[in-house]
Image (cartoon, rainbow, N blue to C red; front, side):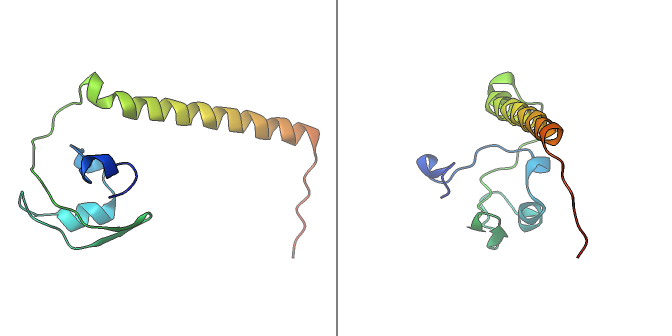
Amino acid sequence: ADNQTKNSGGVIGEKALESLSDEVKNAIKGMPAGGIAPVTKETRGLGIIKVLSWNPARPYSYDEAKSELMNFLEQQKLEERLTAYIENLKKKYSIVIKGE
């Protein structure tokens, strides 16, 4: 199990199909509930995926989306601060890129 799921026995939980990587989507395509997909190679390493169940699409509740929303907002704020920092550096220093 990876660091995010190590305390839950490796269970990722309910995920929207659209939110999965192409590798995972291809691995579980047509997989019945209870089926184990072939090993997938992901950026964090190898993945063994068992489909626990398939549920019809539905909107997330606020409680379900809360942690994802918080992560998104934190990432957005970080990007804004980083962009402002880079713009400030551009004003202070001149950058010259020379050809090879």
